Amino acid sequence: MLGTILYGARDVRCEEVPEPKILKPTDAIIRLSASCICGSDLWPFRGENDTPEPKAMGHEYCGIVEAVGKAVTTVRPGQFVVGSFCLSDNTCPHCRFGFQSSCEQREFMTGAQAPLARVPLADGTLVATSELPPEDLIPSLLATSDVLGTGWYAADAARVRPGSTVVVVGDGAVGLMGVLAAKQMEAGRIIIMSRHKTRQDLALEYGATDIVAERGEAGIARIRELTANVGADSVLECVGTKESMAQALAVARPGSTIGYVGVPHGVEFDGQQLFFSQKGLMGGPAPVRRFLPHLMDLVLDRKINPGKVFDLELPLLDVAEGYRAMDERRAIKVLLRV
Image (cartoon, rainbow, N blue to C red):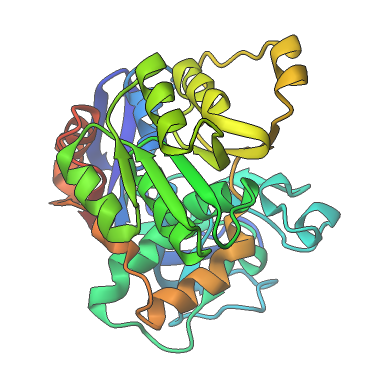
């Protein structure tokens, strides 16, 4: 079968790879209904993360179960399932506290930019629908696997409450999903920092009330102006750079919480600054499995449409163009038809 392999900086290829097989009794094999490229895939694509050897790409997935290991009991062949990018047993103490992304058996999904994928820890990771979903909901169900779950976690970690003022730092797919999540959590005001018209338009559709295009000190000043010099009750940091985290800290009011889900690159903290700022930090890899049943229900009931974040659709053979389009900000998020 064809699969996506990253060889190094800006060297991603669609080529023949072996079909996955059951390796452990807790595994499942699924046939993907669609796949996609994640913003976090761009870090190794750009050479920001080392790639010492060729790497199978893809960690967002949904599809039909083809086979299961002998220990799997919660899903069966023929069912449509969605799983988290963090693989978990869903039974360890951390999982029971809702932090499946810190599972004692945690693994990270790979190899999902392909027609077939192996899912370890299938019982704890996969959630099945009661029946096969309609084709038009596949993009939105795929989004629940990571990008929506991550945006939702950012809002949850930032303690978004009804009527609160929220600032979203980052207008990529996760930031836009953070806007959607904050709206669902009944935030009173949602300010997104964005300089791109197509992303601004989608943010407004998802529930943003204000757009701030400025950056740096000008951006901080603008948010201060919008919040009567108080700052935000909740800040969603959805980028992961030193600059974006500094922006998040600067626009949060004392007593607020910053939900940070951007994979950190070059981020450092000043202990004195944190001490006197009196602002909370909560984040890390999203425990998507905690939210997955609820998010899937919202999609299946057509209460939300996160699939609109996919603004470019390509066949798997053209996956390299998909990476380039996202890297060059010609696309928010690329859907791959496998």
